[in-house]
Amino acid sequence: MTGGFELAEPTPPSPRSAVRRATFVTVAGILAIIGALAGAYYFAMRPVTLKIAVGPANSDDLKEVQALTQAFTQNHAYIRLRPVQTDGASASADALALGKVDLAVVRGDLDVPKNALAVATLRKNFAVLWAPPRRGKKAAPKITKIAQLAGHRVGVVGRTQANVNLLKIILQQYAVDPNKVEIVQFPAQESAEAIKNQKADVYLAAGPLNSKVTADAIAASAKDGGTPTFLEIDRADAIAQNHPAYEAGDIPAGTFASDRPDDDVKTISFNHHIVARKGLSDVTVAAFTRQLFAVRQQLMAEFPLAAKIETPDTDKDAAIPAHPGAAAFVDGEEKSFLDRYSDYIWWGLMALSAMGSMGAWFAGYLKKDERSTNSHLRERLLEMIADARKADSTEELDRMQGEADNILRDTLHCFEDGAIQEGALTAFNIALGQFHHAAADRRAVLMSLPQNLQRAGAQFRATGTI
Image (cartoon, rainbow, N blue to C red; front, side, top):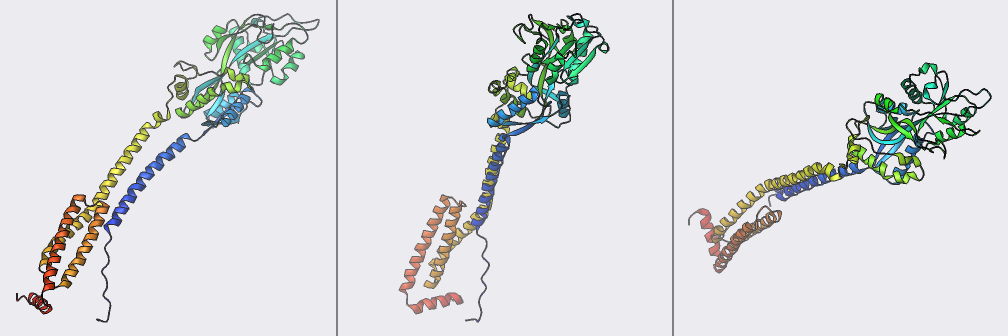
């Protein structure tokens, strides 16, 4: 005994741990890419909520948008709506221009924001001018033409300034100075009372032909007998020519009752639009447009005005250009999920392939040292064949056998890790078999010699005398 302990040499890191690290890095990279693709799919398909400006309170527009909001939610649709109530179409247009909302319900005859693009026509509105029958002994002469309105009072149904502007455009077309016409506005819900109290000689209402507000106002004009006189806008084509937001139209006979009007009445019309800000995604707008027309039939039972929803004008010279997303839906060119994301999927697959190739190269690079080490071990095994044939004692053969066992263990590990191929393992087996034969032959020779001759031979070789 030496009185102390020998310090063991530090064990070098196993080549297998490096391979495991390479495999782990490769698998982690592939899983990261798959996770990124899955995350992208989730974010691409999760519901999108759009703010839509609409007003005023209690208007048909607001009620219709609220019905759409509920329908989208009940159907678990991709697009959801969040109504933002405003004071009217003009305020809704301002909200869109300022970027406070994504969508807005606007009147086509108002200043449409420059960043607004049409998504759908919510409804078509018609201007209705009529004179209720005059009552009393000193009733004024009957008004039958717009040119007779100078010096008279015209009542405008609704508080919006847009209807007043519409009346002034009509008056100017007939060379009637608007300053010579007294214009009185009153809320829609007060129209019947205003007509009953004869607050105006002629009334103007603007809305869809099935508007309850207009129908009730005309019905109030005929309550005490007599028939209201509808004033025809026979210069509607000229107005439409000078003001592109308007179109010539007709009010069919019997629209407001079986005998009101008794003949078709020529008038002008304009549209209420749903518009989207220009920067809104084409995919989002196309999805909204598709959902809008999908639920239209569903809404008609509860909200008849939904039947008036129409696709936007996709012509290049349209008064309000159509949003590319809405145009894609109308023209049947809406892209599917694969069409939109095929490039990303392709690049993802390419990245996966590149990651696999890089991982294989990296694993092969790490195994280079392992292959080199195994090559040296195989050379050592070949040297041990010659050493076994010259061994002087069985103890030396036992030591070489132990070394051969260690070489075998490391070689099998290399084969399991893929550092060496089956052909190299076969060559190693041949060398190992030769070593075992050489060791066995030498052991038999040594066992046949007397013990003293074995020790003498060892001493002679140690001193170099043999």
